[in-house]
Image 1 (tube, rainbow, N blue to C red):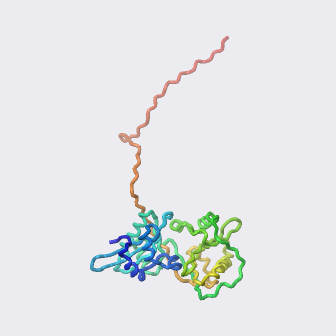
Image 2 (image 1 turned 30 degrees about the vertical axis):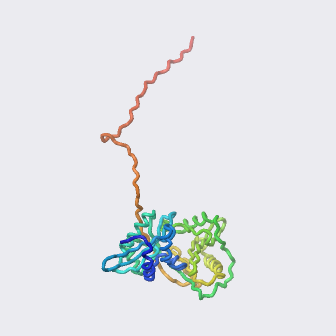
Image 3 (image 1 turned 180 degrees about the vertical axis):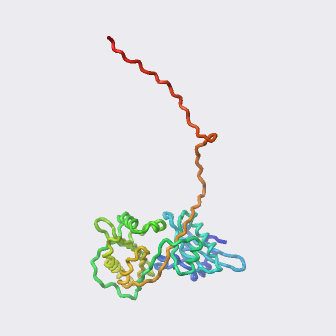
Length: 321
């Protein structure tokens, strides 16, 4: 009843996409879900697009549904990106979610991550399927009708360089809670963000993703820059004024609530509040590996007997008279 996407499912994915739910906020806000394009790409080049799985029921109810996940081989976590249609009491979310979890585990993922509105019926469906809240995030948006930033600030940020990799990872390790680090890897879009370096140490990093629909910013700020956070954000926004005006989104995790006042001062408004939910997966072992173990004979451990040779005492050396 559940299988991978093929050429027979073009119409199903196109029809159900309008009734589905996206669980990847960054992709939805910057580029759009593009479920059909991702499904076709995965069908033509497996491992490149988003694996898409189709539910077709041949009985009188005729239920149809599909789901997509994203997984990179180098990551420990997969991401639930899309499910269609949205949750209903008489739908097939339970079996389809279980199948997506099994597929993610078979590819080597240890966790399956989803971002969902905590007040939606999908949140309850995920919770019943074994997902738990690991953190929460607020998405703040600055719409394009707003005027550009006119405040003159002294530039302090610089573009990210390849040599900043270690410094960014160190910053991530120091400020992100350990529980979140278990399911979320450090930033990987090297060369697309902006950093602040002080005394040879990176104390601020803005991970930036640009798309035709909007700009997505994930901030990583050390507490030592608390007094300069407004200036840093203003400096960052000034770098986007030369682009065609599009909304700017800032994703603030629950451990970064101290950024709320700064974003309000810069004309951002609260746009969405989401729970980052995670389900732990059991990784399937394709072929068991056998190892020999010591044998205990007769319930007692036998020891190797070593025959000891008698020692011969040396004759005493006598001195001649």
